Image 1 (cartoon, helix red, strand yellow):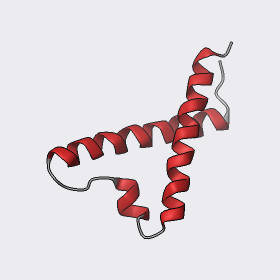
Image 2 (cartoon, one colour):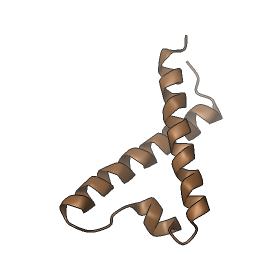
Image 3 (spheres, helix red, strand yellow):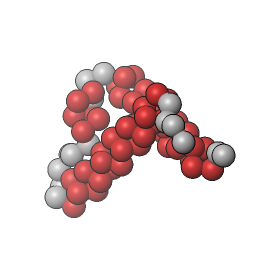
Length: 69
């Protein structure tokens, strides 16, 4: 099955989200902030929230992608 641009964007966002959450977990164990989204966009909270929303929507889309025919 050929992947569309939306499929690729969703996949990239899910990977970015997964890596970020992994770093958040490692950072928590090390008592430091390794939240890359927060580090890069923490000074612009609304943009940071948009990134989190897009990653969440990408996760939902990926679920749809897995079950569609």
